[in-house]
Image (cartoon, rainbow, N blue to C red):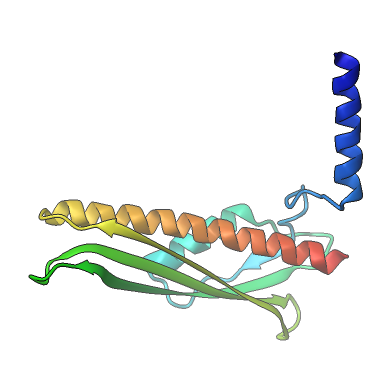
Length: 160
């Protein structure tokens, strides 16, 4: 039985290698990025700035890229009863970012991350506030993760 498992494992490794599988993140996948402080210092933009700054590293030996971004937030009522009471709200946060080479003003890549989520509204204002803040924090965390994935793909495509 162990011979069969070993053979299967070897075949799996050969298959993954043959199909071009490579992990998205490696040690240097988020190296060489500098995040500019946003001009519009809203709470959302500062949370995204801090999340990216913690994740990205400046490279001392290779080329560095500058990241600029701006945040747009929209909220809309999505479940309205006949008596005009809102039961659900949708919150959408969009971040548009650009990448430039450090010593150049030339934009070499632009991307966008758009994440939305909805939350229930109830009769209590404090519960609504907490639901909105919780939804916003989950969206911002997802946006930071999405931007990191886009940057890792940018970097891996730039090297190849």
